[in-house]
Length: 250
Ligand SMILES: [Zn+2]
Image (cartoon, rainbow, N blue to C red; front, top):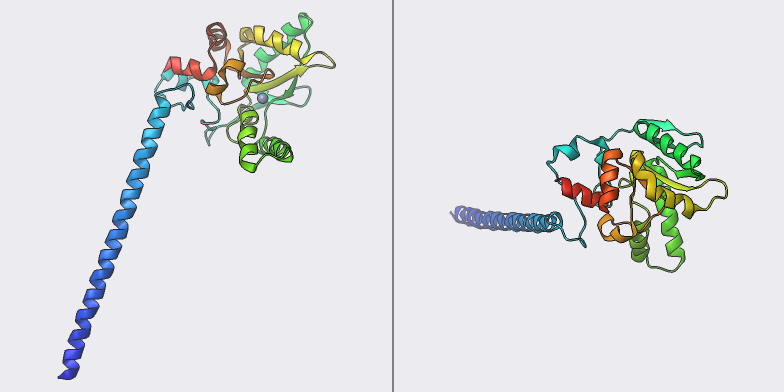
């Protein structure tokens, strides 16, 4: 009899324990749910703030525009817009060993021929880059800043203004070229000619001095990006940068 009572007692306390555990589990799940919903709401709010535009806030391309979607020349790759995972590049190798997307080759050749006939001798110092090359360039710049006694955080922030994080560089899609003067020709002279004339051949100065807040990149007089002749002419004549131009098409 005593044994029976003891057993019932035990059963009851087991049941209480199970109930307690169930309650704790449900409480934890509820907390987790509230946290996840909270984070999503906060992120949604953040993204909508970004999309709604403020020139001090990054530009994230979220578009239904058929003009943008159907034009490979208008792909946006920057600090906040990574290269799509399935992006494929068909390259053509240039005489100096650099490569570019084969679709831009004819216009690039035409531009360089025209420059030479005007006494301007451009040379591509960097065209297409693999992810590894981009990573190496990024690390070199980061090491430079760290050697100057900046903290890791400061060095990273500064590096990102000069070198795109791998996966966010236009050089990785073969549509960007860095141009300097051939032999001893003054870089500034060559880059000025390109700034004024490259739009005729489908290229734009990608990171103008007055657009660093929008592009997320410091002024780079050497970096030109292919967008096609029609787009380049519109961008050049309007004074917009690529981000501004894409926004105007949405
Ligand atoms: Zn570049």
